[in-house]
Image (cartoon, rainbow, N blue to C red; front, side, top):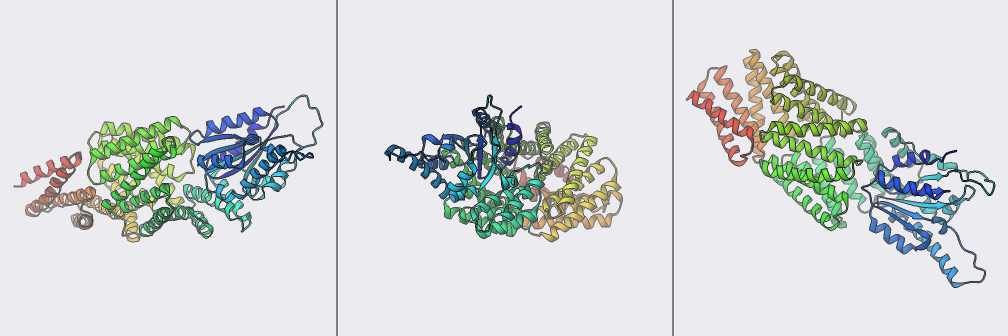
Length: 633
């Protein structure tokens, strides 16, 4: 007869994938089972701190100090059966009474500090060696009733021990304990489990409910269940304390950003920043700065975004310097470098962007190599490869870009295969296919490009159909249609290209009408008009082509006037002028108007090559417009 270790621990390990406060009770009848559990916790979650304390040789003060210094991870209280017992003392010996008082203080202290314990993402495991007939659960309920109410899971590990010296009475009935054991096979199952726990939790058990809400919100957002996340946040907000308020504002801002409401998102992130500053929580303050940088970027305010990202990086560097062994702070620093790279690329400084992305990659590779099972680190490394691909493509090194995009796609495929219900990983894979398609098209392999863009479109159609309220997925689908249109146009199939460009325009107009403050949507619509102008010109409908080119130029002028530091908008306006120049020259036979537009485009590209000299596209376009002007003059 074999032991029950695998059967008992399988749901536990699934439960622990989400880092949060857990109170776990483990009974075992053989020391080897506990040793196996300790080894598995450290091997399965190597990035989390791990500490084991012998309860029989310590007191509450030492346990409490160890817990709060740990900060996150696992704290195992071994030989906890000692704390549940009281040694008989008929002779009133002081040493025995002192030891009994130590036991009482340990149980009482843990019970009284339950609320404080629950504020840390630590799995607290009490380990009890005993036989099946010992009613350890009853002892815990009596001595630590408040902490008992927070229990997340109970394991009863046993293996055959020969020869038995006494008859075994039988396993203690677990009763309602079975109701809280988990088989978290899918995110949907886990969502329902967490919702059930909250529904059945007594209303006055505020701290227990506060330990469940962060798990429910995080899982709901990851799986696209935005309505569930919003409802959970509303309930959590009513009972939240301390830094939880900052976390709630961040999550509410994330949901607003997903829905396209950037103004509300910014307000939530500003409130999160205020709370974290008041509490002097540097970690949460950094999170708020990062989110504010993201939303300012989406709103087109790049100088403001840069300021926020610099503050974010400064805080992450401080935490990394103070706690160099904390892998979460290391990962936070990597993300800070990524954000600085993004903003410097948008401002035109590709060399500085490249340096930050390389720092991000180096930290990402170190984290992934040390903790290959951590999906967050793997996802971060994928993002680093994607950013390096973008930068090398902008620098004109398409082969180097292709190598990074292939690494990017490989990790994305692995993540999506392992977690198919995670909408973020699915979205990331779609973007990876888009990048590969773009690069193959630039290298002249149009059939390969078409294959990747079809894969990209298929994924975005699935995402948008399943989550129509997510404006990011809607915008992703619009871009996918644009890429298919470009590829079909390059292959000579103009009617097919026109159909995709019209789909891109329709989605773009819906997005811009609903969210006019989102500069990305406005820029995307300008691009859609440009593509339609180009296609109608090729098909011979000159009047419609001119109308689309003029719409493109109008939107591009508005964007550049509002955000002159954004090199993408400046380049977009130059392209719009160049398209109008070519149209007037080639289709309307109006060289004077063509020269005027060419000169406007030339002035913009001269400024771009001066301010952002590493962009290969700007250099190429400046040479081309110079040739066009010389031919006309």
